[in-house]
Amino acid sequence: MEDVNLRAMLTIRDKLGVMVGYSDHTLGIEVPVTAVAMGASMIEKHFTLDRTLPGPDHAASLEPNELKAMVKAIRNIEKAMGNGLKKPSPSEEKNIPIARKSIVAKKNIKKGERFSEDNLTVKRPGTGISPMEWETYIGKFADREYRADELI
Image (cartoon, rainbow, N blue to C red):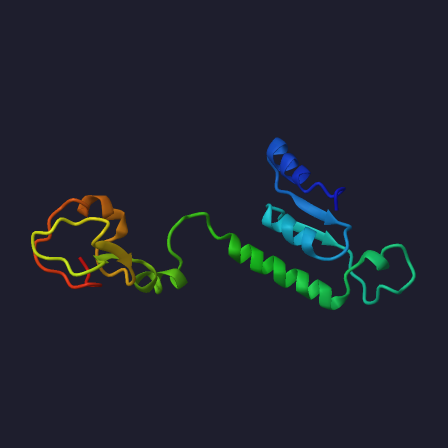
């Protein structure tokens, strides 16, 4: 593995401004899968129906089930790489209301009582005021009574 030097592929890409691929002669599938994650657009990998066949390349080649696993892993990596834009994915969007948190009363708060770290906390769901607003509310006065666990 220490002889692989996948970063050389990036050097070639950056210095020459070309698309790169990777010609793999390692055992297993982890190096070509990683090469794809690093930007390889093509993979060369030896393939055999049986590693025990005579010849110089069979022993280091992938058998059919391994080739299938490599292709599946590469396709998964291609999907996982995404488009580079940071925004919630469709699977994350449906969880936003339950995953995010809101500022709530830690205990009963009387009208006119000052909000503080002693009487406020953050809990789910995220249907109220975002914890990002925490500093805005600390030190303000309650405009009404709040019960423990009630959204502020």
